[in-house]
Image 1: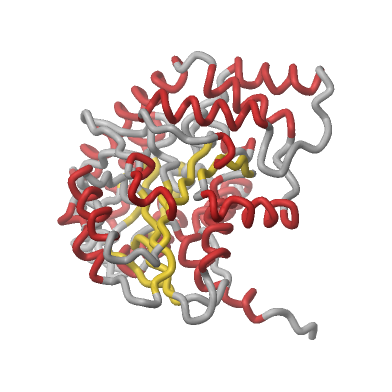
Image 2 (image 1 turned 30 degrees about the vertical axis):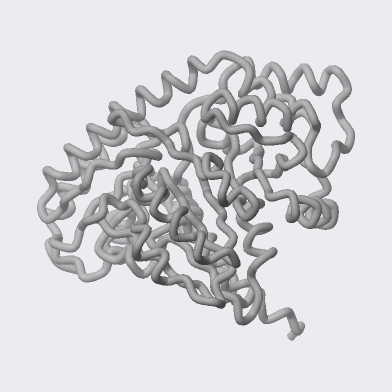
Length: 394
């Protein structure tokens, strides 16, 4: 047997893709599967964005680009951040990357090593913990509680910081809960971080435009006191229905930027050229498609929350952001949320994700993505109701 680096035995995975694979396999067998598992908008990329990529290819944009991204796209990101949030960001601190996970990897690679502690939201995006463990650092979960509106608690977060803490990962609007942390709580956190200047912050703001009920996004870029240790993660995948284009961006402190540039040179060289021109068109072109998509997600959100709250033993807090619902299923009689999720797929043909796939604090919950049609949502919840009525215990 070949001897490999033991760090690779510590890599986890994103179980949404495993559920997708199983759902696809069942569908191939002729089963009628309703997939509420994958976090991917069911909308087409807007036509003007596709046209920009086609034009770039026709114009001969076929070669390597700078590892940090083409300057016109980095300038477009800077203008967009100023337009939406009034924050000034130099294009020289913006890095274009092939998807949001690359920023996670780079940030955790920078600060993760044996003896280091990294704080991350739990329940939260599973790649956070996976990469922390891969790097040999100690993952420290920050509980994300339903009773707190699925927002993080500044007090609870700050209490977990030790001299060994190197990085704090934040996510709002949040996957998998749909929680949005209020500005007042972020203010408290930033004030408290003044006592911990050794801690870097990575703010995952990929869902920053997916907000409902009048909620406003509070970007961490708006706090100059932490800009010298803040890493921002964002991109095009969700907002512009561009998941398969693999296009993201990050904003780095000046002292870290060149380190990550060298990582890019070694690891992914650059993002493909045509996609970057599509990114410019997305930011600077019409935003009607984004507004229409958000309006539709809002309608679906109301359907999914009302439907889930009508199910026996299920309660669902109303998500304020992203496109996920995180219903509490602890009173259904099923002792394991993962077992319930598996049974729903195999028996009822409904693909959802068990809460424990997002962390230890996810037990007792399921994650449903409402990035699918209203008809599919209604049908899926109907099947879930029939299943729960028929099989009351695991």
